Length: 243
Image (cartoon, rainbow, N blue to C red; front, side, top):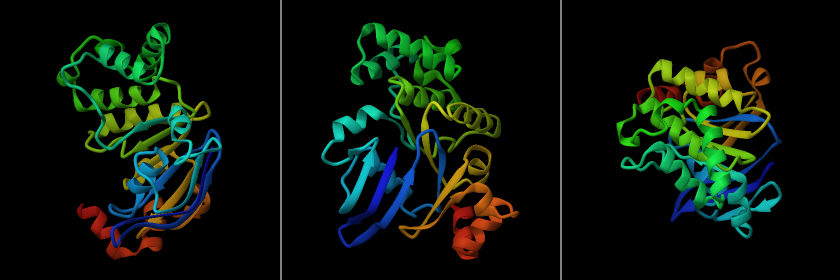
């Protein structure tokens, strides 16, 4: 589903990522793990055609993200760290608007709204203004807009950031329920989120891939924090905790 080969991105003379390669198969849930500033968001923005790479290749469902970006966008649902919501719209009107942007006709948009409202547990707030919703419901609306066109791939950047423990658990459960019907790459620096949601981890550190393994292979009987600590070092983990 995702093929990344020697992907590199520089911002002027500053390296964002360098020589990244990995593959993700259809139906997998993969945690893209690393401290803040490690290159996770840069990689995701390239995959969703938000910005070009400096060099290297990335393909989604066989389509090159640079030369076939319009085809790639049809395959992807993207939830950025800060969901692209319009506070003055109701949930229903916003999802309809996103559906039309995604090329759905009126009937498809209606069906899509009903489907994602049920999937994301939004039925009770479907006609409320987005600006009046709690942080947890707003995050659900963000996930619903990523799902409205029933994409093959979901790209989720820090999907539980800023949520309370109950909201965290609800969003994690929702993401896990989507396994199989969608391929999911989930970017985070929150270790328990990966342990409870993902089957496989790709660790990025200082712009490079540091590990790529099934969760049980990566931890090898340790908890995820211990394995991560050994990989990136105590100093980096302490920085992560302070951020």
